[in-house]
Length: 335
Image 1 (cartoon, rainbow, N blue to C red):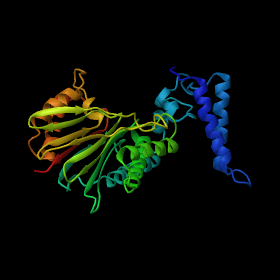
Image 2 (image 1 turned 135 degrees about the horizontal axis):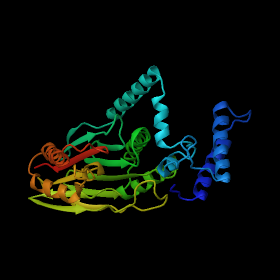
Image 3 (image 1 turned 90 degrees about the vertical axis):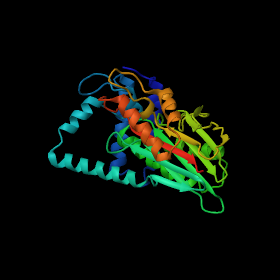
Image 4 (image 1 turned 45 degrees about the vertical axis):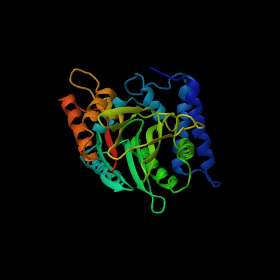
């Protein structure tokens, strides 16, 4: 079984115990706090006995990613899935209904799919792997006299419900932070601190954030995200990420990169569900294929560019099923 060291998990469990103790009311712990405290103590005891990270059902190892996400885990992912299969029809129906509602709430957080503001046209495609997604994107139009468009595209580590919760958290956080008049690099520093303080260790998010004005000027920050593609006149150039993912280090900088687009030029953003897609032979799509295709098809509107890239990706993937959420966004300087 892969591990990151017992000291890491001991630190994580001890931190949780301290937080539970601090949350205990003066007149005694409630039932839920008592239960959680017992779970933490049991996990610490398993660490002392050398049985931490061993599945209590199959006696195999619990996946490292599962332990990092949930240090109290007692079973591996396969056994956890088997427990779901044991649920009765009514419980399964309720679970499916909850997931469907979570998906609807998440989709309601998305901005308009087509947007024109301050001399920019934007279109995006958002396609979760399941009912909920760890990808997120947003478009925030600053009211006059600012004349700015703030845009985001990101990918939270992991998949499913846990990733979707973090996605919603980031959405609300950036919606609040963009109202504060801060340079983009400083806004990202603040966002990273807040994210580190409000998530558990091992959770992070890659993203591209930018601010565009009505004169065609942009500021971009890449936080561990795949390169941004700048498209125009049949040429393409890549802008690589300039910072670490959010949540990886509490104190880090996010240098902003400045550029200006001429009318008709575009930016293309995407999640790694695009570039890491594979064909039936196991070959990865990759950034280079996306760059070459988008440079040949960037003369139209943002929706045409995104649609063309999606068609190319699906032709490449063929019958191979997707394994990740998928998001594409094109931003074009209006002529």
